Amino acid sequence: MGRKTEEKTLELSDGSPLALKAQQLPALDALRLAARLARVVAPLATSGLKLDQDASALAPVVASMLAQLDGDEVSALARELLKGTLAVRDGKARTLLGDDAINQAFEGEFKALCAALIWAVQVNFRDFFRGTAGAGAAAPAVAAPTALA
Image (tube, rainbow, N blue to C red):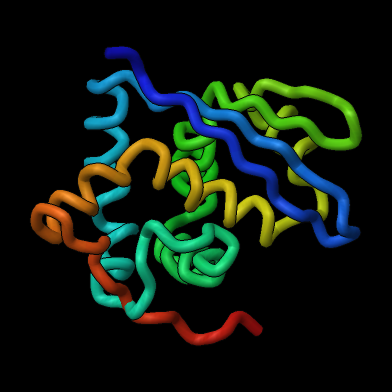
């Protein structure tokens, strides 16, 4: 059984699409990333939101969670979560392997970047969150953060 690949299209602020395609990280890479994400994702476990809902609805939660980190740590986590994701914007395909590609794909689109980060967590860790709720149960609920100013 190979690593799962998922696709998602986000709508950018001007109405144009940003197509994303990601493959799950290798198991040990995902485990290492999960350890780094644990303290950031903890607020998700106590919010009224569910991990498996539309990623764009979770963007404010991502912003709130990322506020707990310094800039270097946020950038490092974003690079790890998006590593190897293919993004197509304005007809240009980019593999998100570094700052330049990520910056070009999400230039001026903070909400889309946050939605993509949540989606990357969903792609890589959805089974973990479902497993913690019990067999056949929905993903755990988490409380919504205060609105961004």
